[in-house]
Amino acid sequence: DIQMTQSPSSLSASAGDRVTITCRASQTINLYLNWYQQKPGKAPKLLISAASKLQYGVPSRFSGGGSGSNFTLTISSLQPEDFATYYCQQSDSTPYTFGQGTKLEIK
Amino acid sequence: QVQLVESGGGVVQPGRSLGLSCAASGFTFRTYGMHWVRQAPGKGLEWVAVVSYDGSNKDYADSVKGRFTISRDNSENTLFLQLSSLRPEDTAVYFCAKEGVHYFGSGNANYFDSWGQGTLVSVSS
Image 1 (cartoon, rainbow over the protein chains, first blue to last red):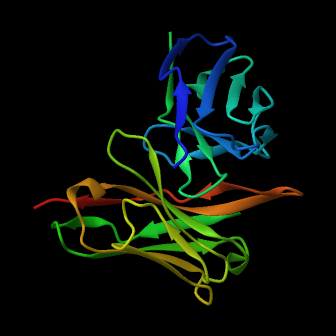
Image 2: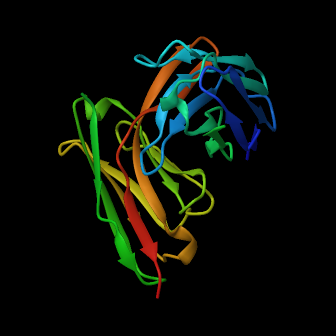
């Protein structure tokens, strides 16, 4: 199975900050990497697919990058509604696996 | 718009069975692969199973293989997950998710573009 490792596991930041979350795969997964946002008690929401394709309706302050086995999710200027948990997920091969999550908290 | 509504969760004793359903609307259900993803209380996301658009291909996480069965009824726009030989570690919120696909020359990039609200399964004696 492909292991996905996110860093950091938690992050404190302020509104207006630029933050970057990193996701590393245990083997190359080309561009088959997705990012989701989850708020407490809610279903995950797709932000970015295929490493860098912004989902329709997602604000442009979110961006994704990387290829191979190293990927990033960047939020250019944090808004209050962005404080949530973020997950990466590989779709290179089943079993599809998720990172352990990065909890983004208000400083 | 796309709507996915899960049902069937509840409290069940270890070793027993339970059936989950996911009613889909707002898209052409029969043309999309569908997945189940679960989340144990306070934990991360775990992919559980996938079924192809026509039901002909299925795959499972090792943790549920041989105990869970995914299926679909395209005439009723409904996805199912039959859970059997349940264990306490199966306790989780179960989400159904619609598959999206980007087609590249070198392969297809899948993702979960719509999710239901989840249904809680609690396995306890």
